[in-house]
Image (cartoon, rainbow, N blue to C red; front, side, top):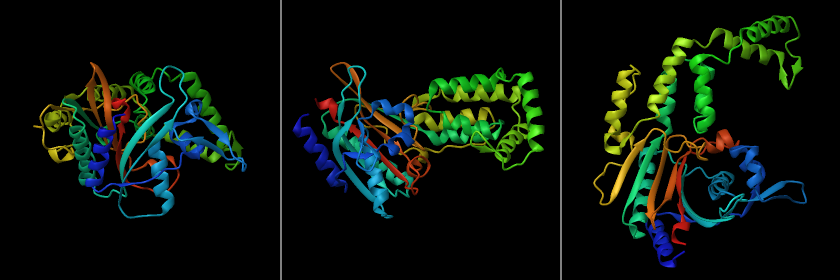
Length: 352
């Protein structure tokens, strides 16, 4: 990496009020697996310490950073940046050691202001790096959540679609099931109902496969009281598919989205203030909005804003900076107190 560019980045961050922190290169594996699942274990350089705790070299500096803040019990807003190496096993030609630089705002209560600060700082770094042209891609997961909540589908299906939004292939399978109810076998339904009636006669505290009869009966009753309907399922799938195809210049996003919402009488309105960028006339920068921005990547913890800055180096497209807002990472995934946060990572590899 060219030290001149690196020093410019550090200077920009310090000028913007971000303070440098040091991160522990090792953390408990459970924090990574809680976020990414057991399938991610194959990428970890893990080992056990003398207390039989499974530890790993950090595969992602952002997790280590937010854990540091969570364990500090600090509740005030904090702007930090850090540099270091992340370690992931590679089964192709990808690098095992990844140089990262990240910046984050913790206890971020003013979303619009702090989201804008992260974007503005990223654009400042881009400008100071001497990169002439770039595409800034913006998305927002909250828009998808709002859409799903307006659809006439069972509540359990709303939660399912929101949960698996990031997993493009499985999400497509869910839409197929919702659209045609082809996965519903009437013989299995009849059998399940018979089992349900028999279980109602049993002790509700009895445990089977780790669940009480009472819990199983409750889940089944939700399905009975809130069934899937083929007609509304088809219409909902049509709306979702059309929504996920929306892509346009960022300045046109509010108009494009509102036109879509009005078409399906969804009673949702998006203003220009919804997006953290209001100056679209920046030289050599193209601002693009997409409802599918970030899907198919390991970004399942983002809660609203998602962005990336893509550049071209030697005719190859590379992501220079990427990030977003993750208000629920600590509470829903890591099992800790809720810490509203927004941040991004800078790909130092573009300089190598």
